[in-house]
Amino acid sequence: MIVLDTHVLVWWADGDTKRLSRKVCQTLEQHAKRHELLVSSVSVFEITTLERRGRLRFKVSASEWLEQVRRLPEYRIEPLTDEIAERAGQFGDNFPGDPIDRMIAATALLRGVPLVTHDERLAGIEHLQTIR
Image (cartoon, rainbow, N blue to C red):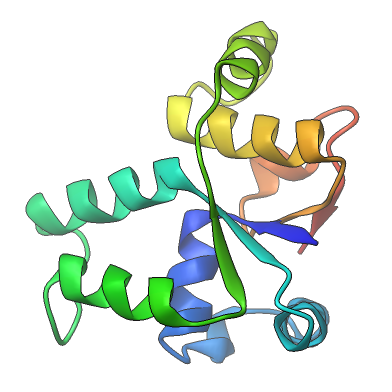
């Protein structure tokens, strides 16, 4: 099992693999075959917000795009729990301030699995295993 950062989900699901490293692509392929791609529900919030603000565009609406992703067996949407929210709030001040990043990272930490991200700031967080 691995957790996908929002941008990794968007790039991978849209086939935009040129933005991903070879290592990330291989990892995603392996876990996709086993239906082990975990997506935080806050990524759904982030995607719809970015579309509403004009910072993200799909060939279809974000709602339709997300519905297509939900139907794929390799993805599992992980709900935001109180434990995840609590852990996200416990990150120190050196952690990137974006609440979405905090909740996605907390999801990976509490599930004991790596986070696949392109975000360099997350790669340096103590106890957070990242794949870049």
